[in-house]
Length: 117
Image 1 (tube, rainbow, N blue to C red):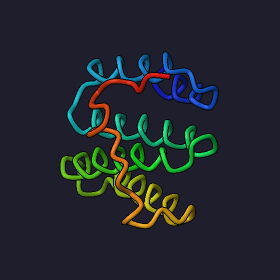
Image 2: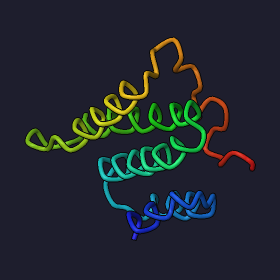
Image 3: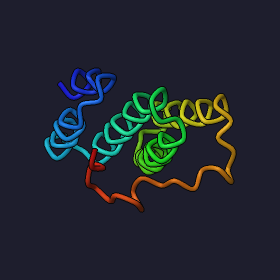
Image 4: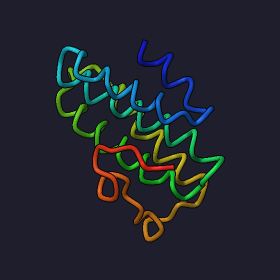
């Protein structure tokens, strides 16, 4: 269900973002919660990329933090979080989001709240 909600992000429905995040506490296991929180952030970043470009960087960085934490909790043979982290890096490189340009951090700016429209 969570992944189907994130498929709606292209329509930029803030309600979809909230709906997806509301499912996180229902997921058993710290690894899984962090991993899927990363998926939510990454997919929201993807949806923002075509509309707001630079604003998506904060979402990718938030996703990468989730993936890094989930990787610490993963089984030794589970590379899913590392692969998703690498995907975020490749997207940021593709769009030339250099480190000095990556100062927009969504968690610092908004915390757990969805930005107002």
